[in-house]
Picture 1 (tube, one colour):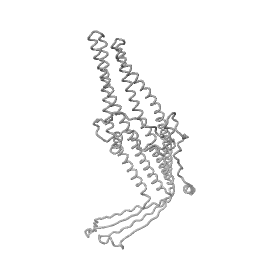
Picture 2 (cartoon, rainbow, N blue to C red; picture 1 turned 180 degrees about the horizontal axis):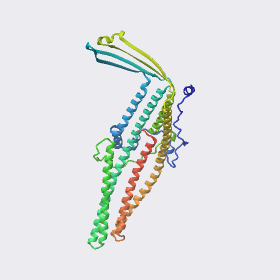
Picture 3 (cartoon, rainbow, N blue to C red; picture 1 turned 90 degrees about the vertical axis):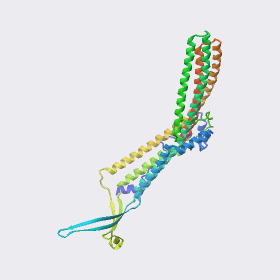
Picture 4 (tube, helix red, strand yellow; picture 1 turned 45 degrees about the vertical axis):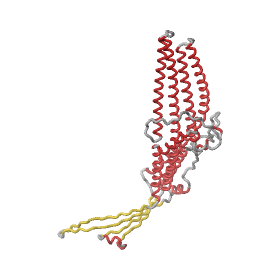
Length: 452
């Protein structure tokens, strides 16, 4: 009786809040020097359009419609909703009806046997009265779990759009990298022919020609590697689009410009916007409902059952109400000892709730880290881009000067070839950083939970 009074006299469901992440949440992002970190405007919807690339917008739309992973995520939402209906069904009376036919043969000693048909119709009703809300809590847990699965679907949409955009930019980078190497090979071919001519006139040694031809062969090897990367990225993008991986060239001729600063808002807003955080909090609430339902297993259960029907050797007499028989039963069951099954169920559900709580806190901390990291990385990548842009200008100028100096016998072949390698390396590094800036911006949108 004391247990009954405690369970019915207080609210067993813990009071959770999305900001209970186990640590203090700052009022603004800590990333230093980021203009986006201090902008309080709302995050714009449809971040794909901010890149102003119709090709990218079309590919993302195609992926959202045809991607099979996303369709699987949508099916999981439907399954979770159906499971919620299943878990809520015990709250309602359960009706069943049975129609039966039997052939009966009776043998009597000395009198032979007789055979006759027997028809019967049976119905039944069973209902557990959910006095304490135990079944309702289970149903609510399933509904909350379905909401979490739906948030997983929204997260999958956002993740898919980000992967398509990043693969698209990587494809453009790979395509431009092939173009850069091809141009470098043309330039090195000119140098190799120059060295060959000077060798034939006896102006340089055979070693110079060998070094020039070796450098050209290395550049051609780099070209084959770059083309292999190009086809690999193209096929990976086609899989995201739900297409056969034919290696089709879907890239534009150049990388788009980096959009303006993103209004990152404040950290606390992230907890109610990011799909994975919403899903983790919903699963925490679902675990709480299951823990409360488990505790109510110790309370008495009230069940109502009814059954009845008719039986006759004549099919036409089944509808005669005078042949009907029925009974109604009301029962009360109070668990006394179940071999620690109920107590074990309570401990397990409480442990699962504790697990869900810690998972939510860890997910929140990682979400904050991803935003801070993306904000900070953009500043460093901008500085790196500026430095590499100067490096490209210097190497291109030094390459022209090296060619002039070699023609006039002022430098050796190694210095000339090194200038070409330095130019290609600087151009490739600048191209990579430009793509990394765009990918990092996508990571920021993804970390902030921006809508597609």
